[in-house]
Picture 1 (spheres, rainbow, N blue to C red):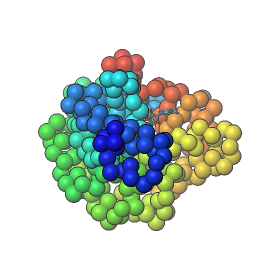
Picture 2: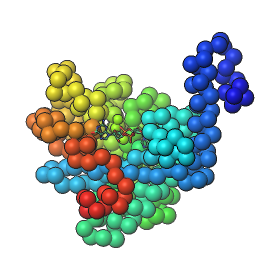
Picture 3: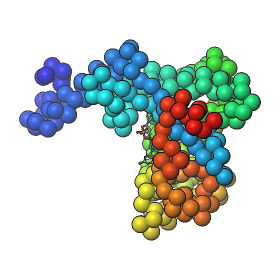
Picture 4: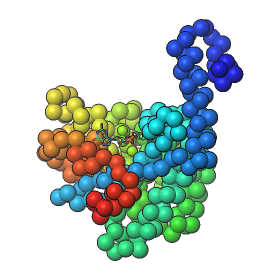
Length: 275
Ligand code: C2E
Ligand code: MG
Ligand code: MG
Ligand code: MG
């Protein structure tokens, strides 16, 4: 156990911390194995635009652990980030998305569908991120206009000029960008104005409290008008009730994602239920 926990155990004896450190090392080891054993898979959560029309889906990673069962990305993504394992995993997710887009491209009824892929800061910050994405598009022959990359405010803090130049290169090929979990980070308005974004995504924490918390309703409303004034699209995540949807619509937000419409689904279920 001491060996697995490694050099992080020196500071003082704290059983709870000991467990966390061991747990962390175990998960990191299991992620490595999971990659080899193909224990990761993807689910699709529909994105709904005006009049209930399905514009596409966000792709979300799932991990079926041999003993623990389903492990949430909230638990394993941070560890995958720290260990660098997010790089091969993220590359795999992107390739899956592009392959699926290429399949849909062959079918006139499905050609319009867009896929949104979450990109971790570490992935985006790789010096060859742009060429990786372009190579994947080239190899899969997907339509880059159907690919949307979800980035978060945390990665904007790193090097804004580098971020902008990477985004510009990808946008020149038709790829679009959505700013995920918007409102929870620190991006200043001046940054926001400089970034070549296409969409803001209202974080589900605001949506879930909107009906009971005026402050959160005000934030959601402000994000919608901010998007409008910056000429960006806006989508709300975590929409669970018709009341929430109606309130968002009242604010001028017409794209939604959440349990009201669907939980994330396997590709088969998504295809069967929504296409
Ligand atoms: P996110 O990108 O903000 O994704 C939205 C999360 O909200 C997803 O959780 C989704 O299942 C959940 N969700 C959707 N609708 C509702 C709703 O109506 N109510 C509630 N309470 N939750 C809803 P999930 O799948 O557990 O993913 C958590 C986070 O893990 C994601 O947050 C994203 O940051 C990260 N993640 C997932 N897949 C990937 C991936 O392929 N790459 C990277 N880098 N991160 C990923
Ligand atoms: Mg996302
Ligand atoms: Mg989000
Ligand atoms: Mg979120």
